[in-house]
Image (cartoon, rainbow, N blue to C red; front, side):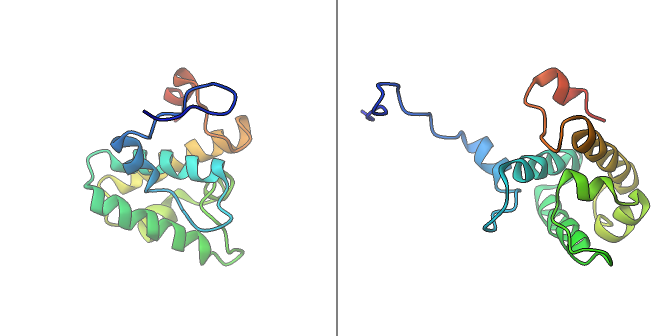
Length: 134
């Protein structure tokens, strides 16, 4: 049996395989903030609809490169940086291989604007607020 914490509370459960999969879409470089990684998981989840996982992984890399190579950048993949992007450029330059890239880019930029503006860059944890994102 696993030991609990020193204060007597039981240990946190290990992440489920599904959670590990989604966390793997986030940027794991040193210095990546928790909210930045949570936002990236939300982006990957949005891209994943009707799109293979391998395509989503490649698209996440492409989106990071798109922001890193921005003329007034480099930027990391955060809600604020994505909210400032032109959805047409995102669709055609960063997400050309994603199914429904125009609609997904438009919705990602809208979602990023709400997360950056209304929630201060933090993806809401409440299910109703999360489902209410564009």
